[in-house]
Length: 245
Image (cartoon, rainbow, N blue to C red):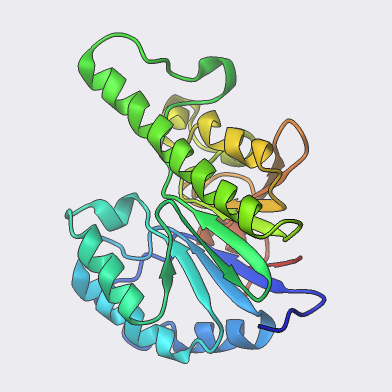
């Protein structure tokens, strides 16, 4: 595939498609297709994790003429139908990443849902009750899956720009504005470790509707919280953020 000098990535999260949304997103996806080369959707594609909502989204995505890469979010898991939602979207041509990687237009994308666990010195540790250990283990596993996907891109496509997409936040900076009491449920610093280790170009996430659009890891990697409510709050009236790489 021929690589363009600059690839425009449109990113958004938390679109929460409902059963009543038929026809609502057609113009949205048409507009994105004119403005970008790839669309990244950072979880919560559906509102209640129902396959009917995923079917509506698949119909709406017929208006999207550029490649779409996505991860699932916690809402997509609500009814334990996430596997069916994934299958429906894959059948519609969406690259759903869950510890996998894909190369589109000369850019590598690696994605996971991610999980909570807290940030920096307040990050939860693997200690105490079994339920607490299981909670922390989920965050560890998600970070490992992301690292493996990024490592595959690193090994097979050296010097290629790489973008990580996830639902949960990898840094605390982009969730500022949310109640501090729920920070441990909005993301985990464990997700930032593979970003730095593999030197990604940038990362997108959603989930924190009242957070901040832009932040950085300790070593300067740009992190974008592209939850739809934040994009609207920041004046992105089109409902998506464009990053050129």
